Amino acid sequence: MKALVFRIFFLLVFFSFGFGCQSKTPDYESIAITITNEAKTNLIHKLNSKIAEGGTEQAVPFCKLNAIGFTNGLGQKHGVSLRRITNKPRNQSNLLSANEEKIFLEVEKLKTYEGVFPNKSITSDDSVIVYIPIPVMGFCLQCHGNSNEIQKSTKQILNQEYPNDKAIGYKVGELRGLFSVKFPR
Ligand code: HEC
Image 1 (cartoon, protein in one colour):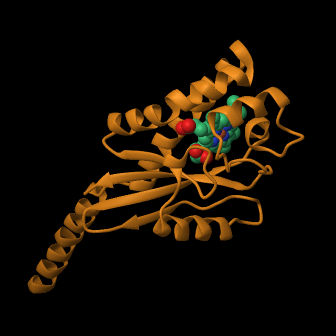
Image 2 (image 1 turned 135 degrees about the vertical axis):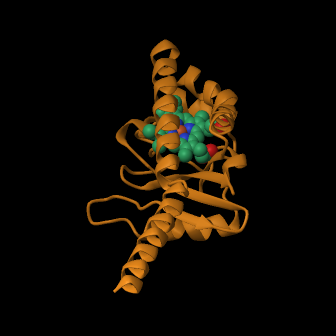
């Protein structure tokens, strides 16, 4: 009887330690969601205020100058490497790698009936990378939609700043890109 009690006691201690250790592993996906929500809110807020100030003619050069610097800086603040990647880049620096393209296509394919793209995590020895989808919304079409949706003046400034622009012709609900949030381990 005593032996049984000991055994149960041992198992209880073992499991509580086991669970204790588990809960110390960071929840990478929810941290990534928090960081990318901050990025999305800030980017949209900045875009909106620039559009209000001087239209897309001012917002486009502003994005060119600041978007990558902003995501880099936000990543640094949170101790991660934060990037926006896409298969149809406006800025060539955001072009995804062959490996990332596989992930992009997989996320794109797994769109639910309700139109939601899933997140995806890849764990390796030295890092955890969480990919968070960036879907197209109505607001994006004035700079990423088809030629009827993009104003002439916007087109002009886009052609001038991005002669190799691939990021047009999108429809609401399509996958525009992914945030890549890389945590060192
Ligand atoms: C005022 C025009 C404008 C609007 C509106 C706009 N974008 Fe962009 N977008 C840009 C520009 C300019 C860049 C290139 C930034 C750079 O050079 O780093 C860009 C780049 C991006 C990128 C990075 C990949 C790439 O192609 O270089 C993503 C992802 C993106 N936009 C998504 C969106 C989404 C989603 C919306 C709507 C919520 C949106 N954009 C609205 C102008 C716009």
